[in-house]
Length: 108
Image (cartoon, rainbow, N blue to C red; front, top):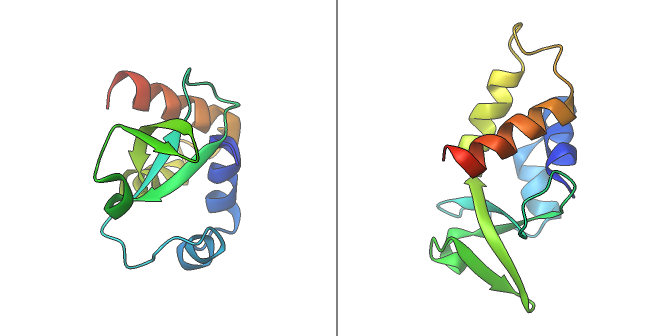
């Protein structure tokens, strides 16, 4: 799954509980984080890990692959809600993914 696909999922039909269940994520986790391999690229796949597994690390290795923290689902869900307002309704999922990735890389 890419960031664009994740945004599309939650803008159109997204259900947090169903998504977490399908990804085998603990809905009771304190925080679920979104990670990506470097170099960061809009087409890179993303992975999801509970903070209890990552211990909040910026870099996390899983199955011999290094991933780097982009953001958490709390921020992501706020971003999705903002994307649904009238000012942003004409932005495509790709536009939004680029905005989010840029923010995660440069401002977060």
